[in-house]
Length: 217
Length: 358
Image 1 (cartoon, chains in turn orange, blue):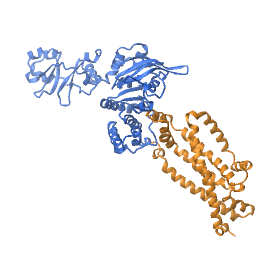
Image 2 (cartoon, rainbow over the protein chains, first blue to last red; image 1 turned 45 degrees about the vertical axis):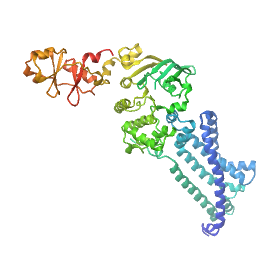
Image 3 (cartoon, chains in turn red, blue; image 1 turned 60 degrees about the vertical axis):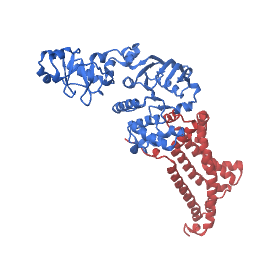
Image 4 (cartoon, each protein chain N blue to C red; image 1 turned 135 degrees about the horizontal axis):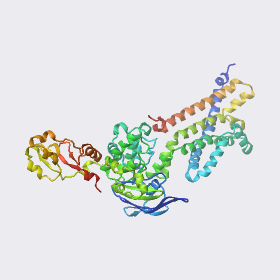
């Protein structure tokens, strides 16, 4: 028996689990992207600065909690199933997005913002025309990070009955079946890589040329 | 548009940054606010476009209080240039300049024409530079784009906060010269903040000297130089301010039309004696400048020797009074002819004109 045996003999089953995996990823991650960017913007607004700082500290701490612990914790409170897994994944992938969005917005040069205000831009103009476009590289690195983390962590979601490629890996583990573990792990890395590739392409598209070139002279 | 600051005060907590200043800013002129850091000059500037809210007093544009004007509209009508320029790094030159016209809802075509016009005004080649990003420009070019951007929607007022401060001295001089040329064309009401007295004297039609939140003295640049009101102002302008300022005064503005000129072939001793000035300019038959002689010298020479002894020094109208004074001092004379490119005599610069009270 070689390592590809399971992969080659059960394409339909693997495909089914892959789609499950994509499904749980897309739902939890897209909510995280929307919520994360909005909260990143919210906590960097002038009037929310104090609360923003506290939130950023809390977020920094949660980033160091292992993913399996997060899922285990939610399982204790919410029981088994898809919803619990999706919610835990949502929260776990929210962290890098909020963190990167906020730090991208904070690092926009004060002089630039003042020039914009002095030229007669409204706060909304400054946010959408200056701050967000300038924070784009940072926002994207948060989104990409979060996508890769989400796809990887979603395998653990299988332990609380959410399905996905984790099911194959954990079954393989309990049977000491290397070929089965391999058949679960390969699509996971393949998914993570392709999502990162797609996001990299989008990042290129949505980031201004002016931010990519290095200083002259 | 004239601006009036009336009893303007700004307090940050207990600290009074600007203390009860009153100042009239003249229409179509450059008014320089100068002083050491922390003197309140930048705070004053930022109160004019409402970036800083005043504590007391009032600001009037054309006699209308700033309170009656929407701050966003006001800022769109005032060009603003800051020291670090504040060009938007994610926008190219075109997009940077187009910001205010776009906020005002201009048509794309109008914006395009305006941007080409502005880039020519600030001496940047539109084709070469329009798609460049700020990081691809030199410091001087960035500054030019900054000025073009501030002028984009043709504002009546321009506020400039040490715009040339971060530029090396050689390029700063060049930018200042270019800026003077631009202002001659556009005639905006400009409030210009600097801590460099040389820059203030060079650019300012008027100067207001700030110190610890108050105006020490305010008036026409030459008034300030001739009659510094107190020790602080005289220290600021320095010991040789009068001499130093000659460098920034164009000869063409001080030309004296009262001069004596005769055609060399028509000159005889009697005609020359009738000339009331102490120097006589000699012309050829086409009225072109040949040279100048003092009456004293003339009396020692015979008519046929005039030509060989003529002094041929002169200055052009775009020379400075420092050039004129230099010739006077090195040649030991008190009159220098001003000659056009076509060799015609435009007038003379006299010693008294240079150093007279204005």
